[in-house]
Image (cartoon, rainbow, N blue to C red; front, side, top):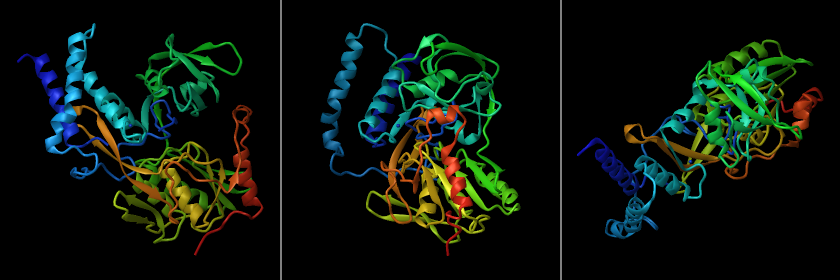
Length: 426
């Protein structure tokens, strides 16, 4: 058996194995950082602390039984055979199998249950590692084109003059109309030192080209500073490997200055590790408070509680949220809101309130993620598909961003300085 035939045979049986073993069950609506995933698609750990082995499949309604398997598979293999017999161009069996898995997972109707090919899976790991090579810009992939949310400070994107609201309509001269924006992000990524030419549409201006030299981008997960009026400001970009320690160190410096209040900025934070979300909530809530519940298929609940030792449990507090606040960021926001520990300012959050197990496929053939549970806030509010409604609804338009106005931040300051921000719970 030659190598090509072996590979085809391998893929055929791999596909059958994946399906028969019921590993069937794919961030974001956008929020990439051109390599950094900031909304919707999460880390391989997903919403759990680590990748875990899925439960063994059970026979139930809609589950193929051994005796029914042949009938169920007959049209698939017939379609496979017909394609190979009649299709006019050469076929790539690897891509056919990947497409079949992708389509099967999409058929669940759950956008968070999906398949990633090996390249996509590697990119999904970038965000929590805190480094990648690209242009350094927060972007939104929920629209027709990749849209710049804001360039990162000191990044190639900032130096090239990219602005909030800029749409990437072509990459290296290739029109990207009709191409999934998440795939366009992959075209923008590349080795440090190489160049990429982006065609930008800005407002009603004529499209123009910008040539950007890619660089290694290091992404801090936490940034903090003191604002006017002696207000502490902390921005979390993700819930990653280093977030817990970075947040603790940042709060230690800020709280030593005895601020009048604290603003936690979770806008465009797409989440990350569940264990990190509990750690973050523990900085602001007393020990033993439920941060969230996980609700499983059988209706059972699992609670996660704060572990104590928080540095900012009593300071008046406001949380900034928007439609890019998702997943672990919604867990923390929902807990703080439920306990009355903080008020939320901004717009309704994304609504990513489900738990995925990310399961790598054998032989480095990508990974699947399967929704296994839903998240509930301490008051057992469901986040999935609904999001969190802010206590104070304040829009931030593209015009505001271009003019460097931030009415959401201004409202948070006003609440603290007027004494209307909550200052702790019992």
